[in-house]
Each structure stands twice: as C-alpha cells, then as structure tokens.
Length: 419
Image (cartoon, rainbow, N blue to C red):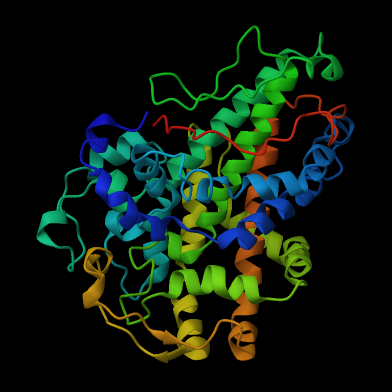
C-alpha cells in the first residue's frame, strides 16, 4: 500500500492542484503509444521459435486498439471521472510523474554527470523514503511550508508505480502458465470476471487463486499491462520528470498541455505511421536499448528501467523548452524560481505565456520531429517491458488467446499502489 506515514501528509484538497502534472500525452498520444507498442512486441521476439509458437506477438497485436484504449484509463476513469472519490484522485496524481530535482537538486552545466546521478536512484521505494522523506527540499524557490520533502506528493512515484504494475503483470502471466494443462478458454468464458481488487486494503490488487481460471489470469495481464502503458508513456514525456513540469521557470508557463495535447492532436493522420516507422529504425533501437539497459535478473529491475527512461527524457527537457521558444511563444509569461509551485495555488498572480494557436503550420512543423521521437521512445519502451513481463512470467502459451477469446476490458478499477 501507499506508505501510511506519507499518505497522512497529503491533504485531500491538493488533488486538484496535482491534476495538471498528472497529464502525460493527452488522449491521442497515450492511445498511440499503447497501440504501437502492441504492434512492436513481435519484433522483440525476433527469430525465437518459442515466442512465435506461443503467440506472444499475435497476442498483443490482436489487442492493439484495446491496449491503446486501456492506456488512457489512468487519465480518464481514474481521474477525470465523477465516480472516483477524493482519496483515489489524490493517490493517483503523484503516480504519474517524478520530479527528479527533488532528489538530485537542480542540474548544473554538466548534464552527463547529472544524468548519472538520476540513473543511480534506488529502485527500492523503501530506500527512497529512508533517504529523502522529511529532508530539506534542495530547490531555492521552495516555500517554507513545503521545505520538508514529502516524497509521495512532492517528488512523485512513477518509477515505483511502474514496478508495482509490472510485477503484477508478471504474476498474472505466471498464474496463466500454471493453469495451461486444464484450460479451455471457450468454456471459461461462461464464468468470467476481472480478478482485480479496487478497495484500499492490505491485499494486493492482483493475486492468483485456485478458483481463478486461465482466462481470468490472462484478462488481468491485459488490463494491468494496458494501464502500465500509461505510466511508461508519461516517462517518455520530458515535462513528466521535472519540477518545471509546466515551464514556469523561464516564463514558459502553460507549455505542458500545449505541447503534449494541443500540438499532438493537431498533427496529421500520418503521425501514427511516422511513430511506428521511427520505432523500427535500427539506429534508434540500438541507441535506446543501450540507454535503457538493465539487468532484468536484478531485484526491482523494472523500476531501474523506468528510472533510466526518466533520465532519457530529462536530457531533452531543454530541447522541449527551446522548441516552445522558437516556434510557439509570442510573449513570455511570469518567470518563477526553481522549486516554486505557488502558481498552482495562487493562479491569479501568475500569467502563462502567450502562444500561437497549436494548429499553426510552423508550430506543428517545428515540434513534429521531436514529438515523433518521444512517442516512439514510449512505444518501444512499453513493448520491451511487456515482452519482459511475458518472459519473466514463465513464457505462457498465448497462441489460443486470439482477439475475441478474452472479454474486452472497457474499464479497469483503480489499482491501489502497494509500495
């Protein structure tokens, strides 16, 4: 569960203030990442006869649209919805981001050294709490009442949310593997439910059980993997790994939603194909594989993978802001000091930057290569972690689980963090 001492420090009134930082790519971007990742899994299987015979590539490809849909659940059903209570909303928000400067301070001119510090963050959330919880925030603009770090609220927990979901996906695949001998997916459809818990209690949101069918275990793997796609997508977005998540430091206030949502949704229909093609380029893959490389046999490797992805995005934060300056900004907004989030609580005192309409041709042309690259990074990283979950889950048989054999999960209950 979310650490009880941490949760007690999060006023429920803050959930509205955290909502902006919780957005990632907007609906189109998250759907695109989930869909394209599902099309890329077969590539990761390569020439493996076992992977081909067990149908892992087809399993995801057949559900490309479903995985795209599920990737938006954490921003829709779990957040922008009237049926969720404030506790869900306040818990969900910080799982979408990680403000790296809270842990490492503001970077200097030596970005390579800073990235090394980021990559060395512990993949164990208990170690993060031990080292940073209650310590002084290192950023100069932090208001006095927020000077003591609340890891969950201030820094965010995305990499550890990724681990939480990844390990549950592995568990679901492993459960399906254990039930292969007596499985008949057609018969199992007659008595089916999604075996995920949504209550805030001491039980994990997914556990294998004797009564659970193979169909239900595979349904859980799909649902968990789908929402996992959202958090991997968030980490591929530079504004999700920084305290300057909306550009106020430097006068670029309002850049977050403008870039990830307004610009992305105005790009042409070729965007999906462009991103998929980028994801398949050999030089792109080689560089990304090297940058995200982890020892998957190590404990908490999925959190390390997520931290490396965050570092990959942080390196490009300056480039994202330069594109905003060059192609979009008409007039700079209020400039704030690093760490000052007062604009969240006293909005009337702060003016966002004035920008050209997102559909302006030069805005779209200027941002397009950058956005294609980051969406491709998210797509490939997601395919990678899905394939790894299948391998770690014992490489279960999936060849009989075509696109219509498993009920379509239209929604997923809120999955309470277990770290």
